Image 1 (tube, rainbow, N blue to C red):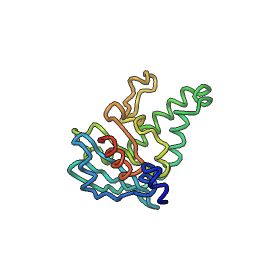
Image 2: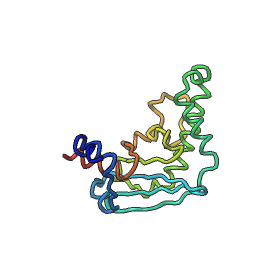
Image 3: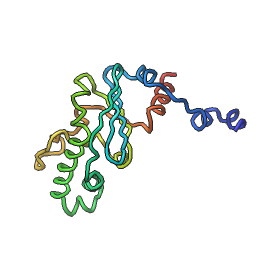
Image 4: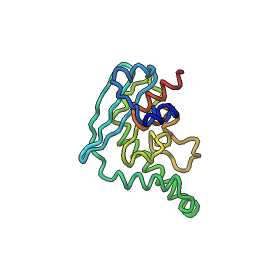
Length: 178
């Protein structure tokens, strides 16, 4: 390990020198227009830790019953080229239904807490949420006959980035400041 520390200091830092940051330290890296959303699953609940530069809130939501089905159908409507080619109307209907359903379960309960000043989200997903492109969730049920450009995508409201953990995000933020 000493040889790795000497010969490959960046690798050593990433692999062995993880540092736990306090909430207050993490908040100093958030700007007033940013919020960090960290999702945690328990057997019964979905917990969302919402961190802004001046506030922290834990929101305990009921674990959605058909979450895995919704994620699978949503991803199928986004990525399964054969399904989309053969069933365009059904794919669009699934995208609309499950894209809004996921938004309704994951974002609607915390929307008011984010406030109007937040325009950037840092998302730390857990479990099945790790596969979801959050920017493509729908803030309302769209008219499926309209162009995709007219659909109410979450990315029209927020710039979204992802992190594996709050500590890893902070380390990346620190490195980008150097």
